[in-house]
Image (cartoon, rainbow, N blue to C red; front, top):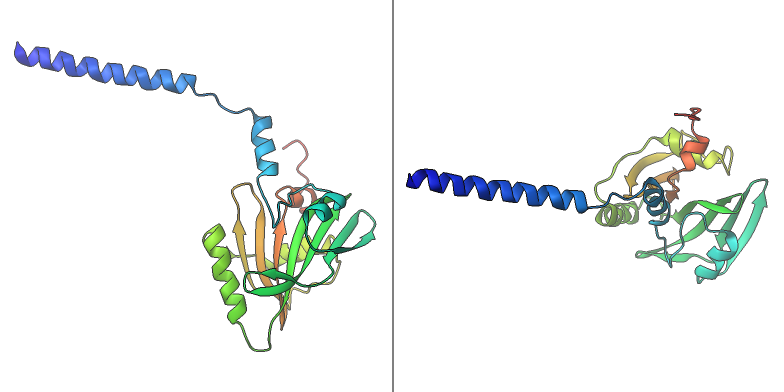
Length: 203
């Protein structure tokens, strides 16, 4: 009899815990798809608070260094008037806009001839922020940059290409584009959907 009472008490406790968990799950609200997309589009922050979709005026107001502006068709760029500090090194900073909406950012570095230590150091620094890297598709990098600089990159000279992805979908690439020059490229999550090889309307 005593065992039956204990078993009933244990069963009652398990049911109480299960009901409480189910009630808590019902009380948790799932964010709307619009809220999810708003978070997705605004979560990436670059340097002094620059975010995807900013126009040139907003970027210059946020960026402490003076930027020079150039335009060609739907695309325009802002290039730092002098090299900026990146980790332990300096680089040219380039913001790239499509219809005055920020879509890509790149740092371009000049490496000392035969010296790969700065590249390796920055690879490690990127891994410490964004996690483990993976090999990047050089054709993808060329296709992205061809949007604004057609023919500037050659698949033959693109080398040692790595990729990271942030939680919001931003892609980050690091690669050599000539023997003594390399870059870190940041790409807006929706950029490739508009400029990829596939038509995705309705999918």
